[in-house]
Length: 129
Image (cartoon, rainbow, N blue to C red; front, side):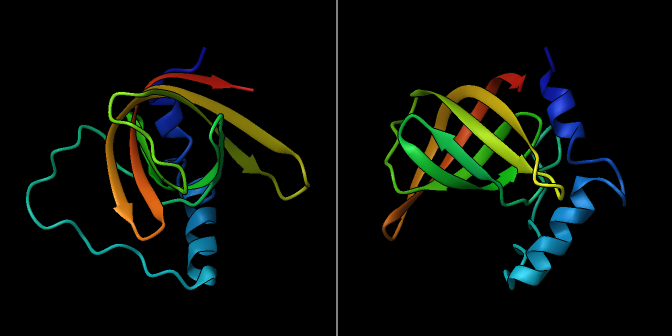
């Protein structure tokens, strides 16, 4: 079973890995990257700003950022703080195939943003399908 560290490494494979591919996608989509964090970094591992489709028992959404320890995503469903949740992240390959990664963890933050909610999930388990 992959570890949380392996999940984070999926996004840190260097110039030919997913990080660069997702960066090009974000640039073409016209989204402006988030401003740099001002102040000391408190996270133990880096965050990667990627947009991936996600599926849950409550519907669909899109990731905002991911890291070894967590996933932040946007959804139209309001999740509760402390709720245990399993998300399926879908990586679509150029050839039409895809890889699914299921992550399970606790909801640690919910922010309302208009008609959507930004949810932070602390990841405890990862399964690659």
